[in-house]
Image (cartoon, rainbow, N blue to C red):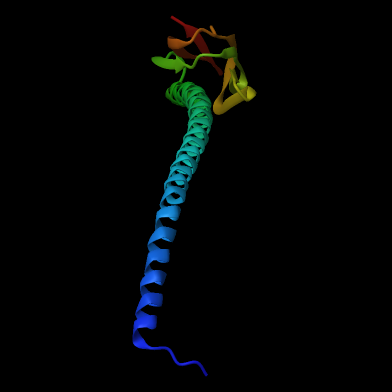
Length: 165
């Protein structure tokens, strides 16, 4: 066992503190580069998340546009079918004039028998939207232009006749 006097221990203690300070000075340069690396990694992560959000937003808005077009087509066919049923229930000679909105991308608009069909082009392809009536409707082809259409729906004998006005 080695015995040291107090002055030797104080010298060793002060030299250890000096080493710690020197060691801290050496690491301070490395900590700056580590902080810079963390900042760059954070920026890359934020940029990646922004790209993901942008892609999802574009997809969502595209899907929303398709859904709105299909819903407008469904509303139009339902409105025509409801008016045809009402006119048929009122009997021969009754007439109604309605306004329906066709979405953009309508490829065909037809009425045959008891079925009213709009075929629309969306980003997902062709979609057919149909509504059915209780009354028999004379075969009719409607304009496919986007926008509002005024339709005359008239009952005559056992048929309902739909025409654009």
